[in-house]
Length: 536
Ligand SMILES: [Zn+2]
Image (cartoon, rainbow, N blue to C red; front, side):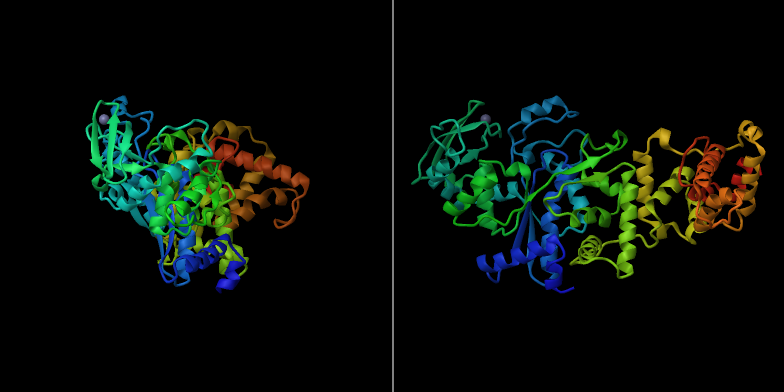
């Protein structure tokens, strides 16, 4: 696909075009910079993955076009620890106000700090998703003095910054300083700058703990610019051309809005191209699976769906469109849609935008992501592992009958995702329990019609022992009983008879009125057990 073709077909290409031309104007010949920022202040919500996926997809498209592009991921780990989340020892209160990298990890963690503890699962998820980026620790940047000149500049220009911020303020501020020291004694940011001398860079502060000192800011590496100054400073420092952000950053007086003026008037830079992205919701996540806290994180989604499917959710929707990530039954429909698209792509029938989204889902500029060699429908796999309760020998037998699969690895990793989904998301009352012995009472109560239908089914089992064959058989039995050919279009009466026949089979096999799709269920139960339970 040429760039011109793709430019008309998907949002990623359109942003890439815009970013490339803007980068050529701003910094010709230099690597193009896209950026994301995440705060490891707690579990990183699955919804926040959009902060990374949006620039990732654009950066990846730029790389696919053979241009050098860096995706910076800023870890805002020098931000203050704001509050102790529920479930963590209340004694962590004493750390409120310290940088996230100076707070101990939650009890039981193997990580050296609060920030590292919450970065780790996100880092692993991004690796699995094929997201290529350069991580920047803001703790590392500030404490190494990387921003020294920018900090001194912001302090010199504090009046100008104050004027920008004052437009959105209701209260008068006596003396505004854009730099906040972390206290030398207690490490917290409960400090107040009391004096600053531009010539000597001497800065005096006091802390609520009673400590106070005067430092030379030109040598001081224990503090940071306030957020509304920090962000535009970094746009200029890093030369960011593309950085989307959430709705919450776009209100009047927000960092994005004031940042546009601050980056230009103070730091001599320009605001990036920065689309506002819409909210990503989560549906149906069960409490069972929230082992890592109350918040769904990207690792939770990757346990129940493959990386390309999760990538696809982001690639196919414009950043301005909100969508939901399903943990409930809806995931089966999502997978059906994904498989249908795969068939369209393989058959050459996909529309350009569909093809672009699919291609962005299954590979990056670095290469393809792992795929499941034999893509058995997710809903079928879920039914199988539900019925077999994960028994690998039984699962292999069924997959062999179903699709001539000879090794479970051919069905992985999708099989493992479906297994995890059944284990964590399917409620106990939705699980399927195949009967061990026949329901003699029910069998004894059946009339001649029902017995004849069951006979027709059981006699056809061997000949129809495949997913397609059993589908024909179970739908065909009521038709034949009504005197129609097995491939006839069902009449309304036949449809009623089919529903009743299916309900009977479910009651006989699993003791309920509903269950997994019947052909899958029959394959899973096995012909001998079906005969036994159906009175054959
Ligand atoms: Zn202090």
